[in-house]
Amino acid sequence: MKRLSKEFLTGFIFLLSIVLLIYGIKFLKGIDIFNSNKTYFSVYSNVNGLQVGSNITLNGFNVGIVNDIILFNDNKELLVSFSLTKIDSIPDNSNFKIINQDLMGTKGVSLILGNSVSYANFGDTITSSVENSLQDEVNAQILPLKNKAEELIGSVDSLLTIVTAVLNKNTRENLSNSISSLDQTFLLMSKTMVKVDSLVYFNDNRISKILSNIEAISSNINNNNNNIKQIIENVSLITDSIAKSDIISFVQNINELTSNISNGKGSLGKLINDDAFYNNLEKSSAEMNQLIEDIKNNPSRYVNFSILGGAKKPYKK
Image 1 (cartoon, rainbow, N blue to C red):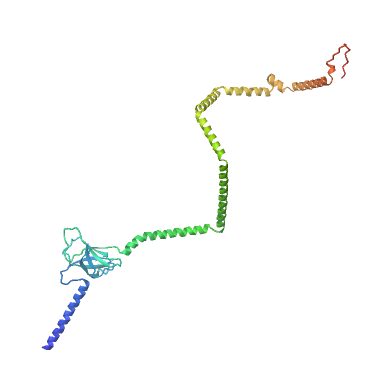
Image 2 (image 1 turned 180 degrees about the horizontal axis):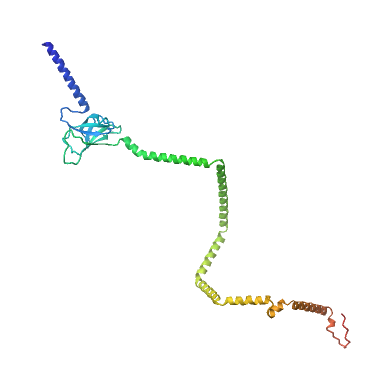
């Protein structure tokens, strides 16, 4: 009898140890076996590191834990069971969303209650969703910048290739010479500006007088605007009168007259174009010159005064 009591005591202690071990494991996982748990399920393609025992929160308040995670559907999806201890029922369109609890990547579940008037039964499968991780958010923000940086680097590389190809030795020398020429040009312009400044400085009074004269001229023009307008109108009338006159007939008559003179028609034409007349005129002019010269040299041949009335002298050639 004592032997049976020892075996019974040993078995009882063994069973109690197993129960305490299971309870301790459940307790460490956050499962209170003495409270009635409301179990629901959700299906995920990726739980992003969610662990059994992770907290389930509703508006930041802990209402349960993750009870279990198992693979099903040929290991393509994950079935997660949730145990709610602080809430009695949830709408059937609620959502179990896996969230980031801290910057270290600790995962939890946020219960988002739906607005349905019907409630889910224990053991129902509730819709699920997954919040982007911090890395995913950073990648989403950085990826566009990364793509732009890669495009910019490619553009800079192409630009450097083109610049390297263009700026060869001869081109660099030409560019250096051009820059030197520009420096000389700027130096010359600086000297020129100094001379101009000096010229303006020493001729300030003259420039002031010139500007005053120009101002006076412009003022006179402005004051005599009516007279200038009248003069322009008179010139316009004269030009209109000339345009209305028969100037074409006058020009034609002049042309006809000059043509007749050139062809030897009329008295003036014969006078100008007759060679004999010209020769006679030239001969008469020569004889007249000889006569005048002879009168100068021998005036006594043509003018003879004698008080006593002497005899005339014979002509000597």
